[in-house]
Length: 388
Ligand SMILES: Cc1cc2nc3c(=O)[nH]c(=O)nc-3n(C[C@H](O)[C@H](O)[C@H](O)COP(=O)(O)OP(=O)(O)OC[C@H]3O[C@@H](n4cnc5c(N)ncnc54)[C@H](O)[C@@H]3O)c2cc1C
Image (tube, rainbow, N blue to C red; front, side, top):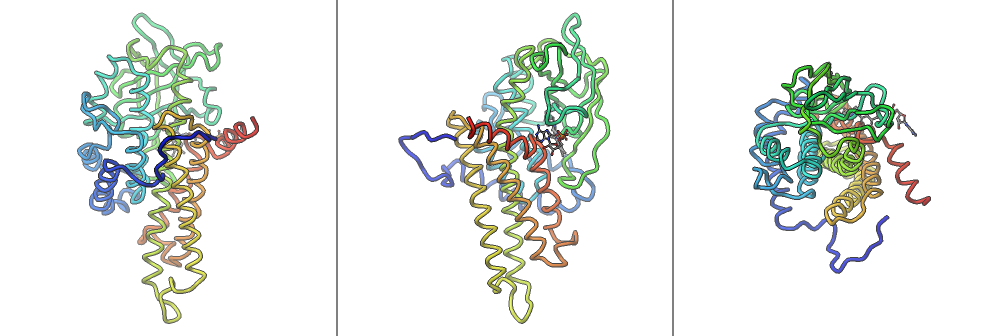
């Protein structure tokens, strides 16, 4: 873990003016534009295109894209704040924005050629949703055991294989697809390709019917001799593993942001409800055991927030952040599950029905311990660091 010194060390949770402005505008947007749709989106397992268009108008679909490419010219920390604020209200909308920014745009900014940036960044900033396709049926935690094959053809590559669990699969028009150009080379064969929805031989398959974050689409991708021009290789051939590792290290902080947003949303509902609901002649928030439960949740939320902001600020400062990102993901996802579970308990019977918002947050929390590296994989990263 980082123990460096810095000349100035401002408190982690104090926001710069631009950060505070962004947080406020996303919070207002989430309350006004997202909240009224949450139940319907969960029930129908769909985020309406009109809402996605409004996210583009708000500027949160291209946060780190420089203004010269039509983006918001913001920072990684801005993306973290936006994902957190959206996830307070709906973690499905949170993850749509998270994948767009912390995985897809991040990878293009870092690894894209000037030609790729010119062709795709203005689209990603204005109307195109992106997706990040690494996992397959046989390769999840062991991601580099992937079998999607890229065969060299005259003017590029031809991709064949199937990807599974791809977030934004339904909405995306641009996909970062990881495939191997040489199965015998192991991870050194892995290459990242940019695949457009309209490429021949590419189809979006089955959409998963899920426990939580139901409105976020999770889809299979099918590639059958899908031709991809050489210019659409992201980074260098055989270096896709590096792109995957590095973007996922950062993406994990975005999932941390999703989880603290969820936990804050659940705690907010629990506080409001316990002040209203009366039993034994008084609001249940006046019972000391309930107060202690809420206080414990606040402790959890504070700890997870500090971990997420610390990892994000380290990344922003160009300092090592690998272990801190793993810590923030595991902590925030466990906190999200605990706080959402408490909120369900404190709502009593009302916590168990869809008319109230907390059962959904409880279902949504579970994914934080699974995607972008399961909790066991995060523990492995942390153990490796502390054991040396
Ligand atoms: C809703 C959703 C959205 C997703 N979005 C995307 C996406 O956009 N793009 C993408 O590429 N993928 C995506 N994924 C895939 C996700 O990243 C994988 O599901 C995840 O990495 C786990 O892989 P797996 O499902 O194959 O589980 P497995 O790897 O089979 O793991 C099963 C269990 O075994 C444990 N385990 C595995 N290996 C070890 C080990 N070495 N030591 C200890 N324990 C171990 C795991 O911790 C887990 O508990 C998504 C998944 C879901 C459910």
